[in-house]
Image 1 (cartoon, rainbow, N blue to C red):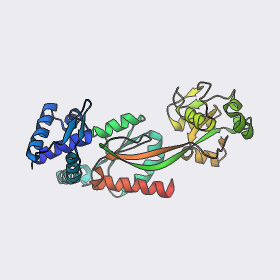
Image 2: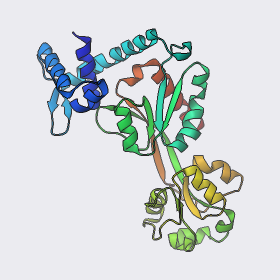
Image 3: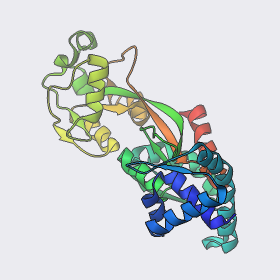
Length: 301
């Protein structure tokens, strides 16, 4: 069986589209279609069902992909290693993407030991979940972290950790808020205190309000800054109240620089997922990074 046909087949299986696979492979869409038809004729079985938007693998297609993809990935890794790398290392460069704050405070510290063992690393900051998944599908990234669990057979997603959200403010504002009144009256107890968030749509405040108070925010944000670390600095300086992940503000809470205004029995949670392309964990460098992140999350996060 022609390895080039198998490579094209695996690309289509992962991409879920002849057009997207063609872009990944640097081929024209007619060339990809022709190669898949040739492979289907050789096997005597259809491998994909054509849909209005992309393709869906048949049972035979799924079985072939699960058998072939790890071996093709291993051959690619071997070919790249034999071709040589800058710096004299045979380790493949690992391309990681996700939101800047989580990469900075969680992912990079966990992967640092691998760098000490010779692993090269390239990091891309991508805030939007769909954007980071599109980049993974297109081959721009090897591994991404996102709070959106992807659907379909293109990706393999593993729950990494849960992120607890905290409603907090500087001590000056916290002294004006009675936790009991806040628990009884809800957001009305915060009237007059500015809101700080990462976007005009109040994604963090809105989620907290809906989960804890069962109501949407009634006031717009007073301060909008598109970085959670900057939100923390603004709150620390007295700009108002905000909702932040506990991992990001834990040190400031411990030092008393900010104060948690409420500790609900069931705090709002958001799950982070570690996502690779299906079959990607057969690559040694990717499997090591994946295991390292899961281990760090279980032990330290």
